[in-house]
Amino acid sequence: MGTRQAMEGCIYTGGVSRRLTIRIGDDLYRALKERAREQGWSMSDLARRLLHRGLALEEIPMGVRTGRLRGQLEFALRDTVSWRERLRQRNWRA
Image (cartoon, rainbow, N blue to C red; front, side):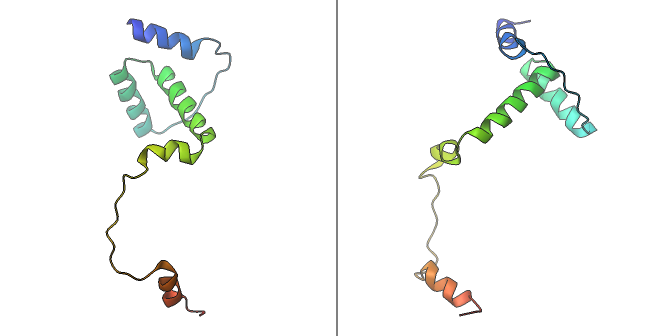
């Protein structure tokens, strides 16, 4: 066991007091096993990390998560019609 794995194992397994059993398909199992092997972690550690990361993202506002993308997208202007005018043209009730 490498130093990195030992240190990270302490962070994620220290204080673990509950057991969770889930059922997953063969394809997800193989992907989890492969990723864990690539990272040098156990499947349990990787699953715990992925759950932790996934649940933590719910608490982070969208603006914070996507802020690094600000200014990265460029759109070519197709025409000079404003979006309000386009809505008026497409709105069958108007």
